[in-house]
Length: 62
Image 1 (cartoon, rainbow, N blue to C red):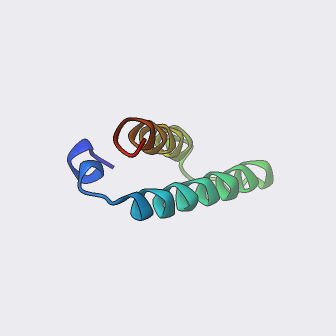
Image 2 (image 1 turned 120 degrees about the vertical axis):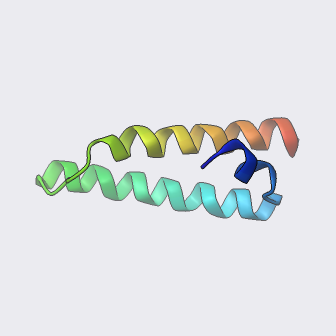
């Protein structure tokens, strides 16, 4: 997600997206362990998106 997209989100949308990214990361870990992971770059991207959303919650919605 880009910064412009993040700034448009409401608090509930941020929380919803955060939960979705956490679920995705959980599923990616299982795929990695089972040898089914096709794109290892998704790990980094998903973790960064989680960090961006957490930062946004601290800064904007505190």
